[in-house]
Picture 1 (cartoon, rainbow, N blue to C red):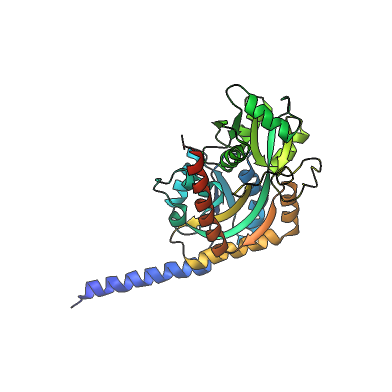
Picture 2 (cartoon, rainbow, N blue to C red):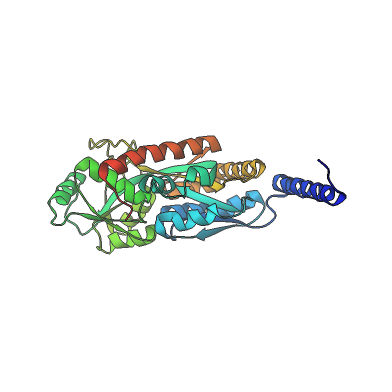
Length: 326
């Protein structure tokens, strides 16, 4: 095969440019602000976590990190935007369980998070709590179960969107207590919280941090938590385990950061190292404690394995319950 001078020079130029891009990805990244995408509106658990870590994450990276809320379609508005973003490390997804639950709920959805994204790191976890409007009659978990079974038309609950953690965990709990609730999805945790506080819906599954805050403000009553032990900030609230309710799926939030598939390994490593350092800062850990999030840094491999197992486990529950996306 013969190459002319033009084609040879073109090949050399392409190789040089390719090498420069890789070198830039490994050495110069980041040289401009990084966008941290959140799939739900302000006021929810994931947005709260983003606000806690974003400034320190940017300081460690050496460039500002800007939170971008892209709610809608149960998270798919944000996830599709990240999937189509350049794989250069400047678009990072702060994802929660919902990214796995969405796939379990929509098995035919073309976007598969295991292929569309590459895990960077696990960030942390948080237990959840069952909350109800404070004006409802039930004062205990068992009274709520009786209330839910007796209520004409069935009990209803809010969530931060179809396929969200708050949606699927409530359905998992409903399966255990033998009720068929009516799901009323909202565009984010803030709106879903307001619906419970305002009495527009009966109940919700929410992070312990958000539940405690809403309880202190008087709008909700907390009936149970999903942690192994009672929460020290709400010592009178029993665990589901104490109540004899033990689900087959994990009823808690987890969070991790992901990037578009094809992002160079050196960039992912730099993002992971920066997140690890961020989570080790005492001030960040204090702020995380205030929102009841336990910092649990984990490498990319651990986060990817968790994502895969969550999709498998929740797919089984979706099939059992006949849960539909719409």
